Length: 120
Image (cartoon, rainbow, N blue to C red; front, side, top):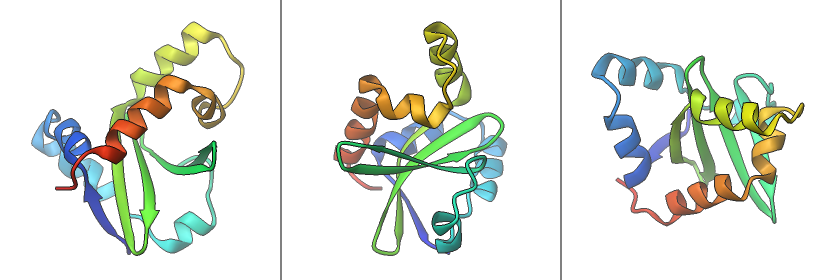
């Protein structure tokens, strides 16, 4: 198991959820090196752009975007699935969610904002 670290932004996004929802999400968000080495595309995914590598954890309602540094999982964003469902619906692109996000300049701005935030 890797240590999970939330930055200010992702911690604030988590705090907007009710307590039971937070606990349920944290219970599901278990990351091991094996998960990262064998991405299943459903629960865990990989997003790359301009030499940046980001991982995605998907639940029924939430998406956590994170990177691995040493033995830590640094969570940059915690976003509700509707955030990207609406985007994909409006764009009408028949491409997988991770592939579409890798192309989105707005998505990478959200992630960079998270990368620059203080760790809590």
